[in-house]
Image (tube, rainbow, N blue to C red; front, side, top):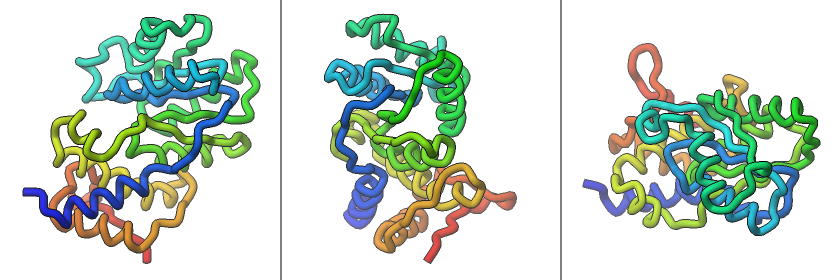
Length: 227
């Protein structure tokens, strides 16, 4: 049973995970591979609006995408773009990345190897991973401007699309945990987390929405909720 308090806390995490950036023209649009074709569709829509002259899709496969996207996330995204009218010449594919850090590092290497100058990136992710993607890119590619984007949808829309409310809450909790602990591991920049967001996170952890938490050696969730 998901209580009214659980939903209020989930909405607070959902709002925090989104950066609230306004899309603007950038050197390249980078779509981070996942199970969600909505990332590709958003990148394609922004390309068609003239927000970037080039699309780069990055991602291999994961346990959740291996069956759905057997040729790799980036390849399936590329196929989607071509199907929807984007010229093949305007789509690059980075097929090796298996996490957000690799998405950024390998994309940077691919663009540099192709001699493509980059001063700004339109970085497209799932709605609840905007902040994580932004913080990672700022750490690994600090000299470029990062503009975060995702499919414009409400939490209810996203839950309806996934079809599993508890899983969505677990994913939002896991994403928040990574924002807390990954800066300590030098994976991303640190960002301020408001006390209200920390409180919501801790209540959701206490309520058992913990399947996406990183665990320590004793199997305990690493909350690292800083005061």
